[in-house]
Length: 157
Image (cartoon, rainbow, N blue to C red; front, side, top):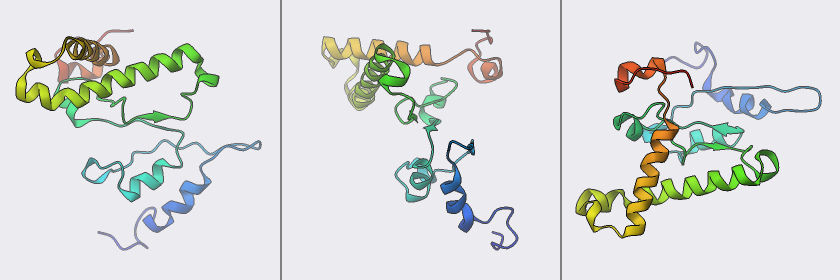
């Protein structure tokens, strides 16, 4: 570990930089950051403080990558301040909320599925699982760069 005075940008100055990332009438400072999240804990104080200053976060999921879903973007943990009815429209907003509810319920059912199997779920929960799996596939895209990982040829969409 380098002492702070040898680091390219000392960590102790990171907070003051984060506070300056904003938009005003005179201009804006835009930032695209890769944030290390210790033990994948989004509630850890260091990344949580950084996330508070951002308009959007795209969270990559090891679990989705392990399932071969690329890009492995977790739609439940990813956020955007732009996802509001007055910005994207009521229908888009409501659809996004229903998608998140379906994926959240699927996530809650994972342990039951692993222990008892799909057959032990109610008809409604089996339908939720089927919908959630379709949503996961829909949110993945056959990128040319992902072909190495997925075995599926890339496509222009």
